[in-house]
Structures are given as C-alpha cells and as structure tokens.
Length: 401
Image (cartoon, rainbow, N blue to C red):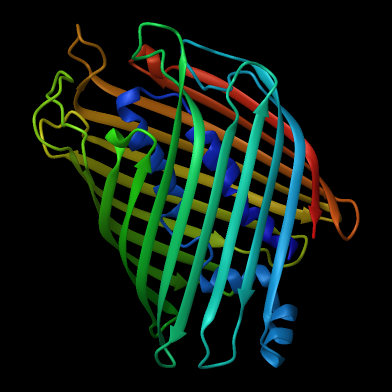
C-alpha cells in the first residue's frame, strides 16, 4: 500500500500551481487548467489501482472480496521564499502543513461491481500575515463489467479550495486576494479491451465551478477519448484527445485590448497528449513517466483569451531499502494569439516556466515515515507581471492508520 504515495502526491503539485501568480481576469482559466492537468485522466483507473495495491493483496481480495482502506496523515513544517508566487509582492514565510488522504476500495469477483472512494484534505497555515490555504478533494467511482472485454462506469469528483493569489498585476495597490470555490465533475464512461493489448476508453464530461464571487461561475461539458497500448511487460503508451466547452453565467468577453464586451463568455478547449510509463522491474528498480501535451483555448469573441500551450513533463522514481525518491521536471510555454504583452506595445504575450519537484521518504517503522518535499519554479515572459521565481520546502512525518 505504500506505493500509493507517488500517485497521491498530485495534490501537493496542484496546490503549488493554484498558488501561482496570475492576473485577476485569468484566475478561472488558471484554476481550471490546473484541475484539468491533474484530473484530465482518471485519478486511479483500474490498471493503476491494481498496480498500486500489488499482486499479493489482489490474490487475497480475489479469494474473499471485501472492502478495504488505506489512510495516511502528514504533518510538517515548511518555508517558501515567495509563497504568493508574485512578481511584485514577494512574501517569504514559514508555515505549518497538515494533510490527510485515504482510499476506500473494493476489488470484486467476476461480474460484481468495482468501486472506490478517494479523499484528500490539506491546510497550510503561514507564520507571516498570509491567509491560510485549504484544499479538499473527494472522488468516487463505480464500474460494472458489461462483458468479458467491456465495462461501463461512473466517476464523480468534488474539489473545494480556498487559496491566495497575487493581485498586484491588476490592482493599483500591491495586495493579494483570495479565491474560494467548489468544482464538481461527473464522468460516465465506457471502456473496452481490444486485441493486441489495446485498451480504449470513451468519457462524457459535465460539471461546473462555483465561486464565492458568482461572477466567475461556469459550467462545462465535453468528451475525452483514451487509447492505451501495452508495449512490454512493464511499459505502456497512452494517447488522449479531449474537447471541453465552458460557459460563464455572468462573466463578459473582452475585445482585443482587454475591454469588456456585451454578452457571456464561452471557452472551447482542445487538447491532445501522449504519455509513456514504465514500471520498476524489481522492488528497487527505476520507474519512469514522460508526458507531452498540446492545448488550444478559444473564446467566443475577439480572441483575447485565445492561447496555445505546450507542456512536457518527465519524472523518475526509485525505492532503495527504506528510501523512496521521486524527481519531476516540467516545461510549459503559452503563446497568446491576440493579447498584447502590454498596452503600449504590439508584441503578443508569451510566457514559459520550468518546474522541478523532489520528493523523498524514509520509512521509520510499519506505521511512520519521514518525508521531504521540495519545489522550484522559474517563470519568464515578455510581461513583467509573469516573471518570478519561487522555492518551497517542507519536512515532516507521515503516519499510516
């Protein structure tokens, strides 16, 4: 069950993205971007769940199907040199970190429904005059075999976040503002196993985002197609194509100069990605993951919000004796087709960033482990409000319950 940790570390990365600096008008796009990046694929699809739980446990469950659970609690102390991830207001602060995550699951006999419920909660309390950050995630899934090679299922996700952003890029005063919102998503799906180790999945997406300020409220609907191919015994290749449409309840579109227009804003997202994964050949072996994605966003007006995004992420992990280590490096670039970098110039806005994350864990006994997480972001752009660096570290203890 300890192998569950690398897959549930994504909320830590999500928080790092959500804390990132962005202009007020882009907050909704930023948040949804981060959520789509983390939840664009199943949090725990069946092949990954089986890999995480291990063959020994699967054999026990197959003999006597039952509900089981895994629960972990983390507490620690951290420090960030730019906790608002701001270009103008850079605040360094220590903080107290606490989180709880758990998985309740059932792997059934043939013909029975498979189900799990995953939950995660996190709070960061800063020592300086910065509002605390909170993140709560709940996801549930149930699937039922339709035949020997097909199954249908339903997945639902709810996320609540209360985070702090840098607002100094848009406001006259050098201040920060908070974002508090609920995001929900429901995904019915059909998947089938084809010949030659091919796995196909079709999903229908529907959901919405509901903010404390209703001006940012939106609803979305779309679809996603996934094709997974087993290459060798321990590696697989996965391609994903998705389209999502988002409609705002109150927010207006903008003209090419950024001024408000009549009507309601709508976005269309088109994304394609390819991911390669290789599992460790032995308990102390290396595991790798590489992902390349391309996304285009289009609005229903002047194209002020239109951009293309290229993202690449490489990660490697290994377990040695009582140690587990993961290193991730990512590169992202945005190019805007209409929006200028500033009001007086004609150069189109672009921004790019490099992010590296290190996660270390040392097992202390059957229930406890020491952990260290570190992150570094390097962001550059032809607009001053998007230029910043930020570092974070946190150390603490993890308890299994």
